[in-house]
Length: 298
DNA sequence: AATAGTCGCAACCGCCGCAGC
DNA sequence: TGCTGCGGCGGTTGCGACTAT
Image (cartoon, rainbow, N blue to C red; front, side, top):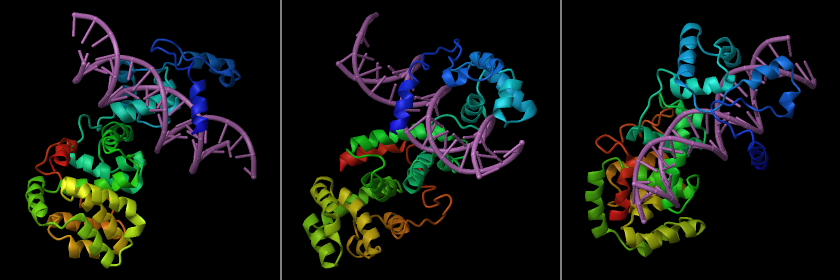
C-alpha cells in the first residue's frame, strides 16, 4: 500500500487533466519512439463524450470486443485500450443493468462478501448485469456506511457475523420476526443466565469473552438481538447444538435454519449461488438498509 | 438564496498473471 | 528462460449532484 500511496502522490500532476487536454508523458513514456509519443500525446482522459460512446459501441457492434489497444486505434478513439474496455464493460455493454440494487442483490452481495471478501469480479459473476465496479461502489458507500454506524469495520468479523447471523436472517420475514421478538422478550432469560447456560454446556465462552461481554451489555438494551449474533458465533464454536437447545423462542424457525445452514463450516444449500439467500427479500423493501430502524426499535 | 458538507458514481491508477515471442 | 504487451483486478480519486444549515 505504501507503494501505491507513493505512486499516487506522483500522479498528482498527471491528474490535473481536463477532458479536452492531452495526457502528459512521464519520463519513461518519453523514452519510447517518437511516433508512439505523438500518438500518446493525443490520448484523452476523463469523462467520455457521447460521440466517443457511439464510436465505441458501433465499432464493437461491427467487429466485436477484445484486443482493446488495437480496437481503440482502429476505432479512431484517442483513448487507451484499458479506458475503452472499462467504458464498455461498466457502462456501454447492452446487458449492463442500471439502477438500484434489488433487495435480493443486496443480500447476495452481503453473503458473497462474507465468503470471498473484496473479490468484486467474482461476486459480480453471480449478479447478472452488475459490474464489479458497481458492486465495489455499493459496498464502499452503503455497506461501509452502515458498518461505521455500528462502530465496526465492514471487513471485521463482528460486522460479518452481524450480517450473517443477525441481519440476513432478520430479513426472512420481518413481520413474523417482530412478532416473535416480542414474544421472546417476554420469555427470554437474562443474559447472565444465558452465559451460565453456555458455560455449563462446556462452551469456550472465555475465548470470546469480549464478544459475549458485548452481547451481555447489549442484551437488555435490545432484547437479545446482539446476543443472537453471538449465538451464531457460538454455533460455529460448538457445532450448533447450543443454539438449538437453549435458544428456542429467540430465533424464528426460519432464522434457526439459516443459522444452521451457515454455522457448521459455512455451508450453503447452493454452493454457487447461496440459494438460501435467494428469495429472502420477497415482500420487503428494495433497500434492505431501510430496515435499519428495526435495530433502533428494539 | 448561498454556502458547506456529504454522497454516489465514473474513471483512473498500479499491480499481477498470462500468453506469445 | 526472460522479455514484452495485454487484460483483468482491486484500490483510490475527482467531481457533479444532492442535502443540510
